[in-house]
Length: 303
Length: 303
Image (tube, rainbow over all chains, first blue to last red; front, side, top):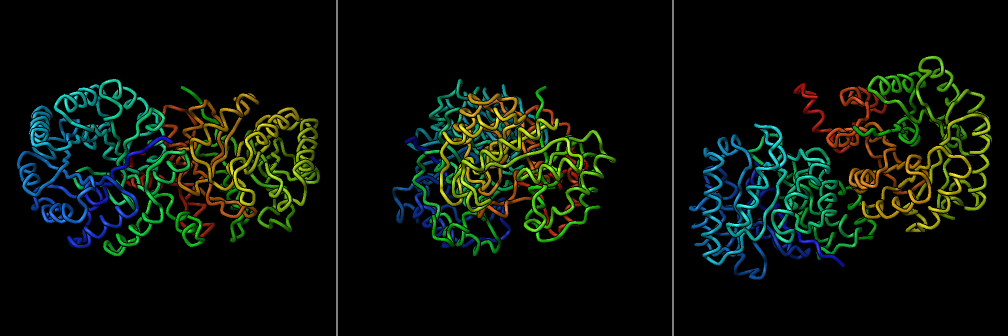
């Protein structure tokens, strides 16, 4: 059977915009629950400025503890720039991700840089990370639509993807940051991306704003893409991208994959236990589009 | 641009299992709102026994009034047997649908007949309806999984589809009655169905129990299917099929179709007005997977 590689982003993309501050110990416990459910790759935290994202102020502590408790886990961290990379390296990370928005205005609003400068900074960060022996991921954010510019130029996405590949990104992640894509747009853009960069290095990141998350995932699967971001419980959204709602839920993707004969190594009951825990921490109900059905099956003992 | 043909089933599949009895006048008003939004084909009611489904006791009144108020609407009605067909004809219907479950036990539990007897009854009803000059639709229910038998034999679905086609069905509707299918199962089964019956006569009917409704719709669109059932507000479920949750929501399908460059002639603002009205009647919140986003757009005046 075919293998599907899921990177769970609940701890980073999920938590970064939550109002409630989650304790470091609770984040570590949530990571342990995800690993217990079979998650082998996750985005653990972000080395952004603690002033801008206080939720991520404990990034170094998270990484130090994970290196002791779960040394085999693929724990990736987001680094916004060279300074973030230095902090991440000092903490002992083995994998980093850079985020490059594909439009001028998004870069201006987000990091006060032109697209060109932001691209160069991402290239520099990737090269430095590779030199340091790290595995690297590069997000192409707002790859379909930008909240400020509207539809993103596919040519720009292809150009940036190629640049990130050349700069040494082990994974290029095409991100529908605001969750505006439809499956036909996914099919069109990703078909072109995999002509530009190797399909084995191509990944997708969907938000479920319009309810098309799983349909988009299926469109990507049909192209042959096997690397996906997803967020347990559908926790998520982007504080810097107006209109971004929850991420594609890991449990939704795992359920669909399982029915399609794709291995994820992730156990749905384990994910439900992680969701239970996250709900207590965030003091609200979580879960993707399949959660009602999954809860029913859990009660009946049939998953 | 390509045309997508949606039959809205909110009035029949949607209302048939609602606890709250909806007044005939309110049903007619809801139909008018759907037609005002651009819906051109809908399942208006069901000529089942009023004892079994009291919500449908006003079937004749609905049809008589629609023939006066909306003579150009394609208003289909469900008929369970020859007696239902006679009542429907007497009321002046122009289009009927028969429902044939694809498994032995579902037929036994549902109508106390063997699959063979049920098939013959459906054939007889279709032939009689065609003789009476009616347009006809034939549902193949539990086409993917049966709540009693588990996975349905694809060979049986193909055999029954061919029989319904031969008996004169203008549309053969492959129904995921309990909402258990995944897009790969849809792709597999529907690819075979359209080798057996003309694709222009093939339709699909999805429930969104596991959150895969839109992904399944996309899989069907990719095969080239252009006829879909959907239910405004996602109202639905089947009282006779344990585990069946809401139908694929019309607004979700229209939104995806629009983004994929497919014409539906249906206006999203109009659908939201119909959902508002249905919510008042059913005294609960309705809406598919895109409803939050659609409501936000409505508030901003951007749809």
